[in-house]
Image 1 (cartoon, rainbow, N blue to C red):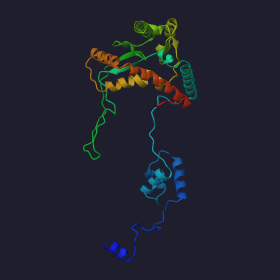
Image 2 (cartoon, helix red, strand yellow):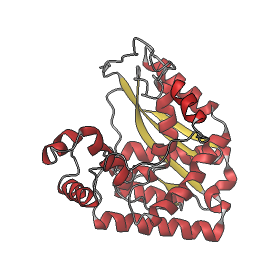
Image 3 (cartoon, helix red, strand yellow):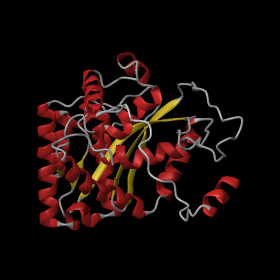
Image 4 (cartoon, rainbow, N blue to C red):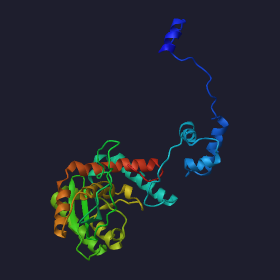
Length: 310
């Protein structure tokens, strides 16, 4: 305060600091280029590893060059079902083009024809998702919540669900010790046709568009004969494409999230719980799942056959 008073008495009227040269920066364009070249040699570097090649620069300044001057950010690898080949991508693009062309021609009436189904395992005790286990707290909250890797019993059953825009059409649980083969799958298709006839009889006259994944029981010759006898149109599902499977990206994803909050003690209780949950979902829930398929096929086509995240 004394120094400021003296300066103002001597005639100074500005309160801002005057510009000065300061200490010259050691970050030159040549140094930035060298760091960039070193990064291109190994993208999985750490700042500590990178500092070995540039001992004259501190860790903080090196991190500033990498993030601010060069604009690099760290990304985690994304898990995918399979590394797609060029042939796989071509098949996905062809399926996308076929679907989008039919939707553009017929609009919502095309989606009304869709019937889809798939099977999945449901457990008596399922682990909650990482998102479900998150808790609110302050930055300095202590102690932080911990969660160990849980190993549950192998008690589980397989459920097959067929559905359309209006809701569930058929739910089938596999008996203990049984397996799904083409014989069992054809029996389920017969039950499905009867369920459609009872619930939406008008759907049979509009030529059903049947979407199911290309598992072995689904593609067996006997299965094709049954579907041909029904005069249903089978939409080709590209291989290794769970991101384009209606049940995988929508129905089962939400059901598994719900199962993470439940505990079942026997098969009968699990059957009843899953059945009640599926039937309790509003028609809007199932309609949204099928409507999303338009966006997914469109995105798949624009990504030249690559996997679709959302």
